Length: 161
Image (tube, rainbow, N blue to C red; front, side):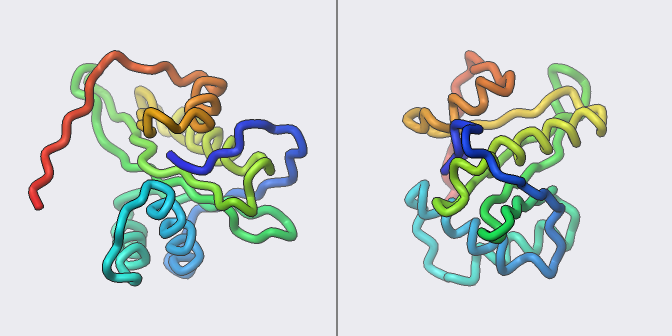
C-alpha cells in the first residue's frame, strides 16, 4: 500500500466509484504510479492496463477509484475476494491502495480505505487483510488509525520465475 495521505486536515470532497472497463486507462496510470513507488520494473508499458482490464472484465477484483474535484482521479484501491480457512468464512485482501502525489492530503486514501471496509461489512466477510512495506510508516499510520492490527505472522513468497 503506497502513497497514502496520513491526515484529514485540508480534506477535500472525495467521490468514489467502482472502476468499469472504460476506466482502465486512468486506473492503469495510477497502477503504474503504484508499481513505481514499490520500484517494480515493468518491461511492457501496456501490462498494467491489460492486468487491470482482465481483473475488471472477469469480475476477479473490485477496483475503486477516488476523484477529487479540480484534480481528477487521484487514487485507486484493488480488492481480491478470497476465504479465511481458519475462520471458515469469506474475507477480502486489500492488495493495492495508492494515491498519486497530486491527490495526497485530500483524504482520498482514507476515503478509499473506508469504502473498502464499508463494502466488506455489507458483504458479510470476516475481515479485510492487507500488507505494506516495513518502511511505509505513512500507510501503517493510516491503517492503524482505521482499526487494522498488525498480525504476528511472517509472510513467505517463492518466486516461480
